[in-house]
Amino acid sequence: MVCIDKSQAGRTVWQMTGDERFSNPAGVVQGGFIAAFCDSAMGASVVTFTAGRPVMVANAEMKISFLGPVRTGSVITCDATVIAGGGRVVFTEASVAVVGGSLVARASSTYLLADR
View (cartoon, rainbow, N blue to C red):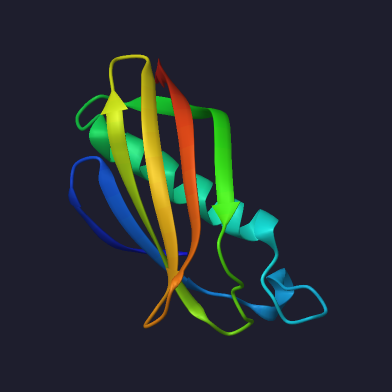
């Protein structure tokens, strides 16, 4: 995973290649790996949302909908954005798409904040 944009507080964009290590025998990247990709991107967005306040973030819940397959070798991006948040709880959403292709997953999550 590589962060390719964190220029706006509360939003990050990440990119990665669907490596064979994360694929099933049919050549499709496993859903759990896509979920981890979303969780990492959304958690990073929360950290940028709290700019200047050193926090630890913990995922309280997450939902993901898979909309299409990610074939091994595909480059995918995850665009994660804070939708609403306060001092203790932040709600985020993420979209995963194949570069030059279609949307393959949508996720949402609630994160709990604690001061570091």
